[in-house]
Amino acid sequence: MEVVIVGGGISGLVSAYKAAKEGKKAVLIESKDKLGGMIGTTSTSFGIVESAANGLIQTDSILDLCKDINLTPIYTNAAAKKRYFWSKGKIKQIPVSFLELLRGLYGFFFKEFTPKENESMKDIFFRVFGETISLNIIEPAFGGIYASALEEMDPQTVFSDLDWNNQKSLYRKLKSKKDKKRSVPAKLISFPSGMGELIEKLIVFLEKNTTVLLNQRINSIEEIQNRYPNAEIKIALPFHSVYHLLKDSEVTEKKVSPFSESDLPLQSITSITVFSKSKLFPSQGFGILFPKNETIRAKGVLSNTDIFPGRSKEGVFSETWIYAGKIAKEQSLEGLISILKQDRKQVSGKEEELSGVFGNEWKQSFPIYDKRLRFWNETIDEIEKEFENKGTSIRFLGNYRRGIGLRNLIESALRL
Ligand SMILES: Cc1cc2nc3c(=O)[nH]c(=O)nc-3n(C[C@H](O)[C@H](O)[C@H](O)COP(=O)(O)OP(=O)(O)OC[C@H]3O[C@@H](n4cnc5c(N)ncnc54)[C@H](O)[C@@H]3O)c2cc1C
Image 1 (cartoon, protein in one colour):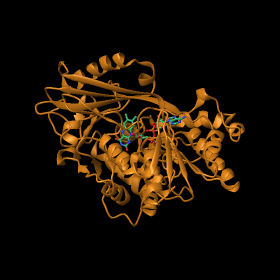
Image 2 (cartoon, rainbow, N blue to C red):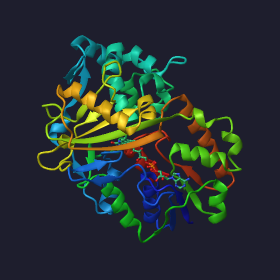
Image 3 (cartoon, rainbow, N blue to C red):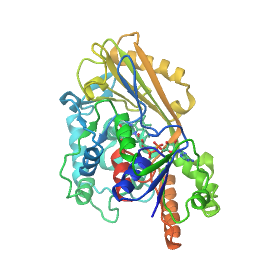
Image 4 (tube, rainbow, N blue to C red):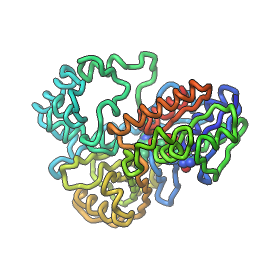
C-alpha cells in the first residue's frame, strides 16, 4: 500500500524513512520550497546557526537510523556537563540551600506524584518539591524544554506516559515506565555540520523510494483521499496547520468546530544566536536557565561553543538566547535583540559589541502542554479511531502529540 505523508519536517521525513525501510512507495507533500520544517542549519562567517533544535537525545533506534543514512553523531564536550541557573544576580550550579535540596529529594523519592483534583503543574510541584526548588530549578528547567511557565502546564499532558492510577512518587512512577530494552545512555547528540545534516542525509536516503512534492499545501483530508485513494495517510504537520486541516475537512469539521482558533494552546518562541569575541561567562558549561522571578527576560542561553565541537570559528564564541511566550509574541526581532543586549549585560557585567546576530522567530507555532492540548489529543485519537473503523489508516504526528522533543518525534514516526 502507498503511504502519503503530509508535512516535510523531521516527523514527516522519518515517516518516509520508515516507509522506505518497509519497502513501501511513499509520497511526501510539503507546502514550502524546502524540507526540514523547524530544523535547519545556516553556515555563517562566525560559525553555524541552528534555526530551532541544536541537538537530540540518542536512543538505539535513532542511532540505527543515523547508521542507515550514513550520518555520524557527535557528542557534547565534557565541559557541557555543567548547567547553571541565574539566582539573585549570580550564576550558580545549585541555586537553593542544602536543606531545600534535601526537601526536594525527599519529595521526589517519597511524596505522592498524582494530581489532586484540579491541581496544576505548579500546584503539584509546589506540594511535592517545595516552592523554592519549584521556582528556582524545576520551572526554569521545564521552561528550557517546553518554553512555558509551570502554571501554564498540565501534569497529565506533560507526563502523558506515566501511570496516574496509583499513588506512587515521581521516582517510582518514572522507574516503572523505564524502557528496559534501552542499551545506550540518554546522551545529547548533534552532527558535525549541525542539525541540518540530519535533514540532508534523510533526503539523500529517500531519493530512491519517495516522491517529494514541494510547494504544495494540503487543505483537507478529502483532498488527500481524492488524490491518493486507499493510501495510508500520515499527517506530520504543526498543530496550527492540523487545526485548519481538520476544520476544512468535511469528515472532521464537526469535531473541531467547538474549538476556536484564538484559543489554541500555542505560543511563540524566538531563538537568537549571537557571536562575540569574549565569552558570556568565564566558566564552561551547557548554558544558563533564568527563573521568571528574576530580572532577565530570556528563558535561557545556550553556550554553543562549549556544547558541541565546531560550532564557532577560532577566537569567536557562540550563544543562543531563547525568548518565549508573551514577549516573543509581542516583540519584533529588533525589539528582542535590544532586550537580549540588556540581558547579556546583566549576566556578563559589561556591554560588548556583538560580531554577529541571527534570529529565528516561531510566532504562535509551538504547543503549550496544557489541559486544552490534552483534550485536543483525545479528540485526535477519536478521529484516528473513527477512520480506522471505516478501514482508512490516518495517523497524526508532531510535537503536540504527547512528546515535544526530537527523540519523541522520531520514535513516534518510527512506531506509527
Ligand atoms: C527554538 C527552538 C529550539 C528547539 N530546540 C530543540 C532541541 O534542542 N531538541 C529537541 O529535541 N527539540 C527542540 N525543539 C523542538 C523541535 O525542533 C520541533 O518540535 C521539531 O523540529 C518539529 O518537527 P515536526 O516535523 O513535527 O514539525 P515541523 O518542523 O513544523 O514540520 C512540519 C512541516 O509541515 C509543513 N506544512 C505546514 N502546513 C502544511 C500543509 N497544509 N501542507 C503541507 N505541508 C505543510 C511545514 O512547512 C513544515 O515543513 C526546538 C524548537 C524550537 C522552536
